[in-house]
Image (cartoon, rainbow, N blue to C red; front, side):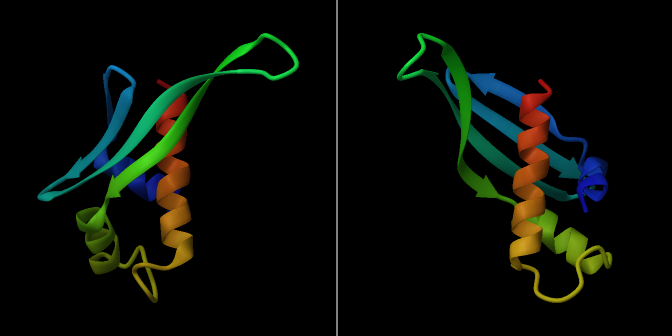
Amino acid sequence: MISTLDIFNPQVSQSGGTITVTYCHLNYSGTCTYQEMVMKGKFKPINQKVHILTNTDMGDVIEYLYKNGHIVGEAGSPQVIIAIQTHSSSVVASK
């Protein structure tokens, strides 16, 4: 499933602390939005960037995957949701 999402050519854009991953292929599109936060350790003064998924709008992407046989069974299954979250997270981490 993860390599299947690559056909949507994910693009990352950032505005302030908001990071958006946009997926587009043919007439299908979707977005995953993350909030970037800097957290300081409790016991060690180390600053660490953390990305929190705050919103997704992947209905078109799921529809495309379902129509083209990449999803078998229920379109809103936990496996599909986890695959989308994992893929978008890896795209954000590699930016």
